Image 1 (tube, helix red, strand yellow):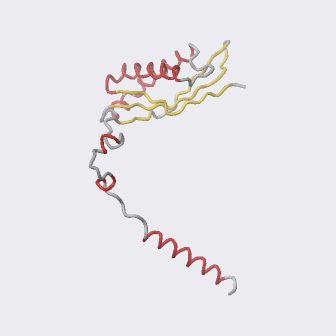
Image 2 (cartoon, one colour; image 1 turned 45 degrees about the vertical axis):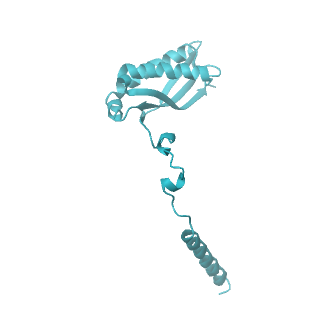
Image 3 (tube, one colour; image 1 turned 90 degrees about the horizontal axis):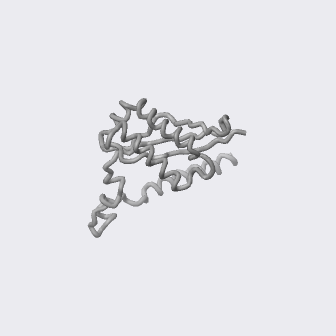
Length: 158
């Protein structure tokens, strides 16, 4: 009985605290309450006024970096496309051809030394994004407005 009473009191205290916190939580705010000046927050918030869809390409891209006739590193990228509303279906319909175009750009970038040294430098990444966007537009037209590099990693060989 001496061990049960403290445990029981702890459980009752925990339940009472959780119930009190739930009952005293702040009320949800409406948009008018959050912005009493009446300014249009939809224009300021890109998530509210989004005019694009984002399509994550299903598989990562694996690019070998070849130096002196051997693979010195692997670069792994995840890409997403910024497309006009309704453009997602078009991306998935031509994904094999799109991946081929994007892979060719990535291979060319690797072969010209784009993944050596400080490969994530802003100028280097801008050139890569521009080339990827041109390749995506070659396949999908103007429905693509941007190519986003979601993840990039280089694994050097030992």
